[in-house]
Length: 347
Image 1 (cartoon, rainbow, N blue to C red):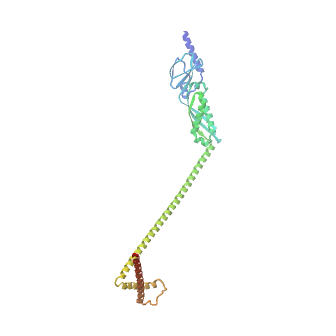
Image 2: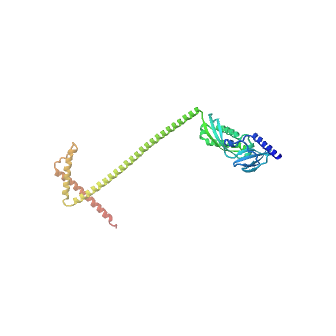
Image 3: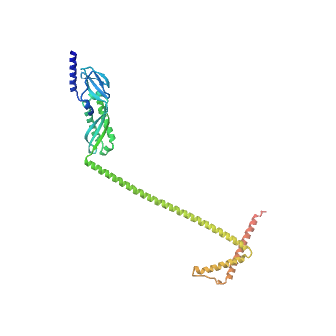
């Protein structure tokens, strides 16, 4: 009978202690099924990823690991239940002032995990509230170091700085902040309008710059085309002049060779029999042809006194030809005699 009375008394004390126990730091999903602390039933089964803090006569005794555990009735009680899973805390919307004095409304999400159940139970009264307030104050401090434009550009670095600052303070609470994400950034309407105007001005500036660059490229291309056309034209003119000069040179050479052959053939013909008669005939033909062209080319005509006497003009031309032939023959003979004297040996 005494044993039954003792068990009933211990059960009543456990229920009173359970009612007087502080609320746990649990997620809303856990509050639906864990509305109270587990009772000391001597034999306890701790779920995975949970840590139960046991107090003996009001003082910390030990932490129960997942699995089978045994406790002493009346003396031992479960003071705290800590969830070791990664938890998500919604940071409420808050106002912050940037470096360029723009007021922003920012809310975020905090991801954390309990690493030390002892510190999380006895290091701070309400860990969730403490971490939330720390995240808000850290956010205000970090935003005050950046201008409005950098807040949007350096969002990742801002999150990283907030996580680092939270971890420096939450180490004493046995909590590790894994990451912090900014959900939304609300800008005042006037600032938003000015930002839109700035964006439009920036787009117009880029369009003007692109248009000017296109005009410059077009002018450069046109100038380059004119330059290439002039170079090609000059090279074509140069090639044409070279070809013309080469053709003229070849024509002069051809004429000279033809004239040389004609003179050589004429010389051979004159040395033959009746050569003088042929020469007289040629001179007479050229004389008649020259007189036929005088009246066609000019109105002023100078005629010799014996213009009508063709035979005398032919005789005169043949006399000049005979004298030149004798002179050339004499010169050739003298040159030949000089060569013979020079080839004789000296005594």
